[in-house]
Image (cartoon, rainbow, N blue to C red; front, side):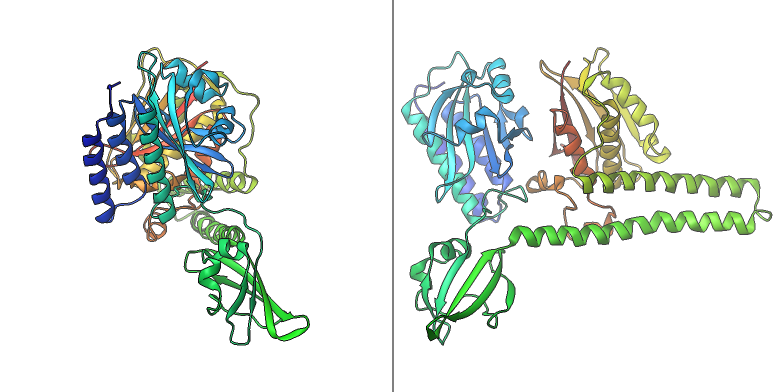
Length: 485
């Protein structure tokens, strides 16, 4: 650790970050660059940023000795989470004082101290920034704590702009709010505007009073759903104020989550009907051909028709598995987690792939790969989903590489393709249900958008984690990490 902070490097790097923003960059690319700038200036071994959502946190960016944590979840009930969300906004702590699994791994890797700063907007925590130090480093100084706090505030400002952040669909900037209430006159000018109204609309009381109501007014006794420019949906009702015919009272509340769920339900029905129709139509067509023209078909044509029926039936079975598991919000259990040979599981899963994918896929595993703990059959499903996804988004004849490895605590495997790649701001959203990268992807690359969503659910139910990153030279790498036996 340096005796003092390298302010010149910090300012120069921060200028580069601002220039990225001014040139149109946003979200994860800017956040990653900010961490890369701050780490050497602070003399830290690694930096990490955890984004918090209602269900807990997840590491969305990391550098140096902490880079392995990217994609790692931090559950809401983890003791480390409770500490991060309480106490001073900036604090220096020892990782070995926590009992959570992630903190334990940090301590085992020699990252014994960290300076933590919460990133807050209006008192609401959107994430936490961590500067990690090794055991032989000097204790972080007050000066370093101040700089970590400054960088954390810069990240909070990025969340306030909502340009590419949060990366999660249920992100931390969207919070459940109480009903807004306004009183308006005959000209629909606001006479009263309660604090919840200011929170829901983003318009302060000073900005709202004596100004026109900033959204349409439904007729008395009726309900209107309206979308604000900031993307939030309001459910609005109105009525005459008792005792004063000149004034009306308007109540409204945030229904953004409900609208999102309704959209997902409609999308689920639309995608399901479309995706089921294709294999069913093909199966029926070839089955009718065999029934109506059996005698006129040669042996080769019959076998070809039967082969296609079998392929489409397998596609249909996989699709139904995805849809049923997605609807149930769970993966079918197959007993308690148990030790198994990951290398053997990978070989077996690859052997069961469709012939065109099997020809393109290579497998490379170490001779002595440690056993992992989990559900063997569901991990075969994970590999199948990842390889299928890699094949869909890459040229037909391009190779798909599957490799495996291990460190002191985890066993991992990676699926790398040479396809269209994944943009940095999409590496987390790709795991959302029904999400696809670009508006045209659903037409260009047909599918349900459920594969990666289910992969993450399966892996995390086995105490592992999965993440995506761009492949050097083009394409995408999907990496799955599981606990060692």
